[in-house]
Image (tube, rainbow, N blue to C red):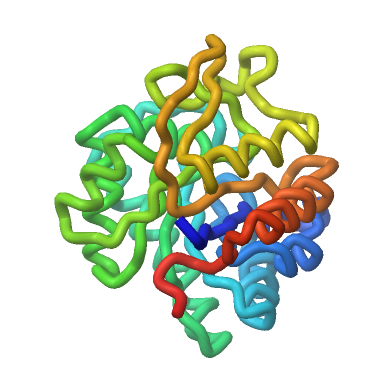
Length: 254
C-alpha cells in the first residue's frame, strides 16, 4: 500500500460550547467526518465546518449518530433497523444541504460512537445504515470498521467501502475495539499511537490487547478531534506516514 486516508471527527462544538481545533486538524487530514446535530454540532457549526473543510480541499463526510447529545453518542440505544435507516437518512440530508450551499458535495458517510460499534456486529442494523446511504446517493462511500458487519453490508449493496482502522484505540483479538469504559482502551501516548498507525498503514497489522498480532487491512485511519492533544496526535501521525513514503489522500482521490 502506498497511500492511506487520514480522517478525523470534526464539527463537534455545540452552541456556545466549543470543542477541538478544527482548522488546525483540517490542515493535516484528507477526510472530515462532520457531526450532524445528533451527538454534537448544530446548524451553525455544520455550516462553518463544511465551508472550512471545503476551503482546505478535504473530503466531507456525514458523521451520523444516535440522538444522544448528553452522552456524545457513545451510549447504546435500542433502535430498530427502520429507525436506524431513518436517522441515517435524516442526518445525511442535513449535511448535504450545507455542502450544496458551499458549492461542494458529500464524499462519504461514517457512523459515530455507539451506532458505529453496534453496526459493526449487528447485521440487520448494518444493512439498514448501508441501505440509507445507498438510497440517498449510491456514489457515497461508506466508512466502516475493518472486518465488520457494516463492511459486508455496504459491499453487498454495491457501495464503495473504506475499511477503517484507529490510531488511538486498542484492539481485541477478534478485530473489535476495546470498549472505552475499560482501562487503556484509548491510547494517550503520541508515540504509541503513531507506531500503531504505521503498523496498520505500512504493515497491515496491529497488536491486540492480549499481546497478539492481528492482520488488519485498512483504507483509512481515524483520529479523534475531541482530545486535548488531538492536533499533536494528528501532526505526529501525518508526519510519520509521510516519512514512511505513504501518500495521504481521500479514498477515490486522483
